[in-house]
Image (cartoon, rainbow, N blue to C red):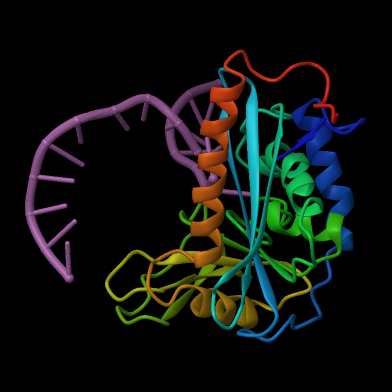
Length: 243
DNA sequence: GCGACAG
DNA sequence: ATCTTGTCGC
């Protein structure tokens, strides 16, 4: 597992963080359809925390998009870079997620985030932010509707309904399992909303959440447990050294 | 002004 | 996100 520092110049206040979002938002690419579902690789990313001990662990798990087999994975550990503030989640997760992606042996392909992209107060959620910083195609698949509204989609798997900010469609409530609460899909970077939903369905043949996020979630939780056992006092000031 | 609010 | 036992069910 690699160790990461909070980047120099990382925003320290909510005001600075919002200004970063307002500036980077213009760099989001929304006129590409993105990779076809079921081909190439798809990478799930997720993060687990221990706020008390100031430890954050990110995981990136690469799946073969056709078989959903795991073909690579990586983790990274760091210190918490920002408090949780609704609308500013990216500043809490991104430094460690970037380190985990960098530690991967190959190309990530499409990146699936646990959270939102376009569906965001300033239309620049975690998935959009990660996409702009890496240049990779990204989507967001969230478990909750955040502040947005939606009409319940039909009961069968595959039905969807617009996720709305007023009358603007910022994403979609997508039913991945019959009779189960939908997931909330939004565009990150270089992927269309239709394609983002198609990917989400292809990644969730059995459970509510995409296999990519289920795998990443399990891995970062396990890695956090192990990191806490090895260093119960929390992370040292200096990055880990190699011998 | 107050409450709600991805993870 | 995280705190947390058992329990119902495939």
